[in-house]
Length: 199
Image (cartoon, rainbow, N blue to C red; front, side, top):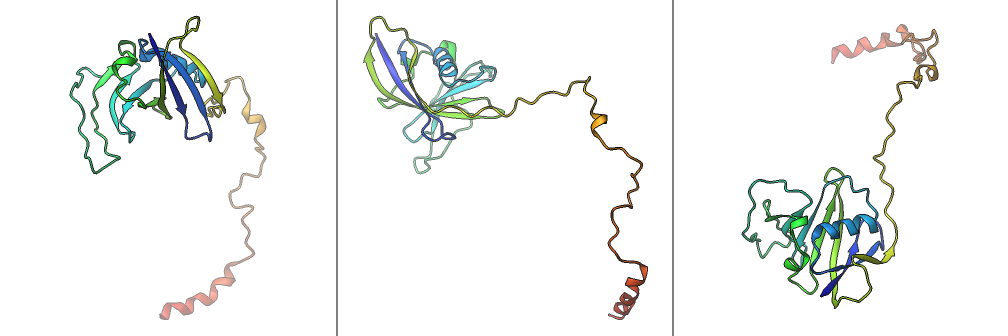
């Protein structure tokens, strides 16, 4: 049995790296779980892998859940002159049913991993090497960690109904909208503007 060694990059953090080793016979759901543990991510959001060509064009999507009724099995077509060309409909697969060895077709296979579609975090995965399984080693495993993910700022605290925010407001008698706007002019200052009516 062989294992794959993948290197994971994240553009939002300079020098971010994770090296993941996983058996070729494992499925993408186990690779997903290994990434959640190694990065780490909370695992509460949807995610997909995209099998890419050497120019990072997406060719196949491997989703955490089956999100479509009809699967498209033909290969996508790209304009050879457009390196960023993408097809809106990719062949769809589900992680738990998709073995790594069935999708690795290149010695330096490129894979994109997109986590959380509402606030996407996109990781770039490249196959570094294929090696015979080592006895006594438990796969998958993370063998190299450089840099950490920034904290997710979307965890807002919901207001507590017991909190009394009214006490923090200064609701004094001075709620006349006219006060505080005295600009030093009075009605007499505008008398000279009648001359402009001629023009």
